[in-house]
Amino acid sequence: MTERQSVRQRDPHLLEGQVALVTGASSGLGERFARVLAAAGAKVALAARRTDRIEAVCADITAAGGTAVGVRLDLTKPETFAATVDEAQDKLGPVTTLVNNAGVPYGVRPHKVSAADADLVIGTNLRGPFLLSCEVGGRMIADGRPGRIVNVSSMTAFHYSGTPTAALYSVTKAALARMTEVLAVEWARNRINVVGMAPGMFHSEMMAGMISRVGDPSDQLPRGRLPDPSLLDSTLLYLTSPASEAVTGTVIKVDDGQFGR
Image 1 (cartoon, rainbow, N blue to C red):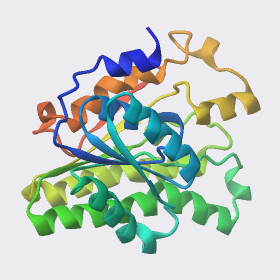
Image 2: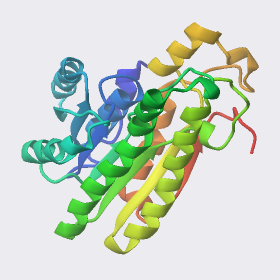
Image 3: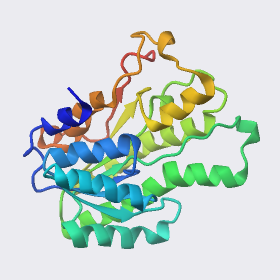
């Protein structure tokens, strides 16, 4: 079964009536998440800086029977967030689900991090998702609508093995997990579920870059593999579906047994 076939065989009505905004959707896990949500019946706004790539993915989703539009989003420019959400809502309707997926790695030892690079990584991985969550969550509260916010953290938020260049990335992902918890408490009364998922090492564009720098870690992992990202689909669909209505403030670890507990 191909990756695309596995997406199409999901329940096409599971998320019917939902409108999802997915950040970092031009490639990698974000692109896959957008495809999975669309295949489950959600209307999906794909947000990223690479608009040419977004349009190609939207065309593919539409050809498969889904509904998708592209919107440009730079998470380091919060002054543009309101206009981005306006555009998504004008095209698809009020956003009911936000997936904060976009993030950037950073391959520099911590004592060599520049202030400019720290601003970029923190702005993209933490400040941007926080302010975008507040933009979308604030609209849900104003309209009296329930909703869901899914934050894509990382196992590096909970387990750090001394990888010499992952410190700043790990800090931002740990903060994203804590953001999930506190916003869930803040917005429980508004029926906004804030949840997260913390993937381990999966095949992805970001992982391919790491492998090119330091080699393939598969033989060092308990199951001797880097899992296919399709194994994240069920967690995403659970967190965005009615089945998880009572689940909020939780970050689900999905790491194929790669890390200790």
